[in-house]
Length: 158
Image 1 (tube, rainbow, N blue to C red):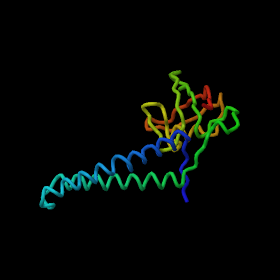
Image 2: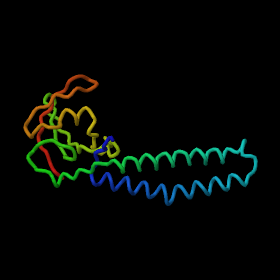
Image 3: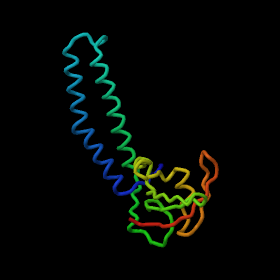
Image 4: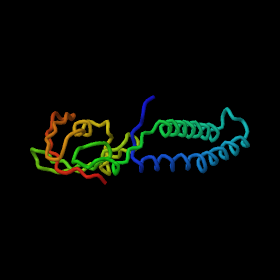
């Protein structure tokens, strides 16, 4: 069985999403389907078809989340030895060796990743290039623009 690594915060977010889908979205969609049925001919009823499509999406998302939570591997970095090594869940600051530009990323599970807020997936090229390295190490990362070299400035176990 495939295990899905996630932080404790990521697990809580998925649990909240599934609760929202089951207790709010599902009843709203069922009500929309019932109202659309009252309008008559279902073959030409756009409201009915839209509500059924929403229902399919909602039920699919619920199944997807339940499967991920069922095979989740929750990793709390507070329990790990803090030795400056880049592992899942850490916040790492890296410096581009050519431009000296620094960036800080938190390495998280696929469902938690959001590049806009500097959360990158453990499966991303940047994270894969950093995992296992220590503060002060250099990491060569292959990007769409070519190979880029970074220095690991800081590893924080937050």
